[in-house]
Length: 199
Image (tube, rainbow, N blue to C red; front, side, top):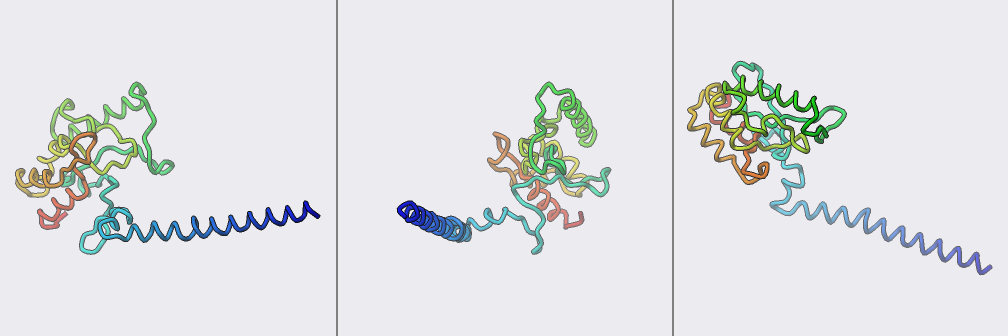
């Protein structure tokens, strides 16, 4: 009889703990986090830092998506870092070391393609233009990579080079790769707005 009483008491105690923890961690804690995220100034971050234009979501300031030009010969966009993202791996690095032959070949191909696109020698292409980030989704590029693209963007967007450089400066912050970085999505939107939304 004593063992049955003990079992009933332990079962009841376990059920009470289960109910209390379910209420605390399954209901109250998520509600508190949700309510905290609604505080003005935090809501945008909590909702994914979505960037909108004319009431439509056009991307996130935290996720780099490389724009694909409709006409590569007249490309008016700033480009992000290359991505290691694949359908099987939605975020992450390639996990290839600096001496991996495939990685070295990819970097050389990227450097040649970017040099051709920007009309410069391969030696002028900055490292972040040819190497993917740890997440594969970096939203920012270095100021050097933005400056490298400025001439092409100005020409194809029909803007003065000085104006494009002003837009680069306006979209430069401390959120780069260990150095000041330029967030590509807001920069492209600013270029598009300055060009009259033609692209």
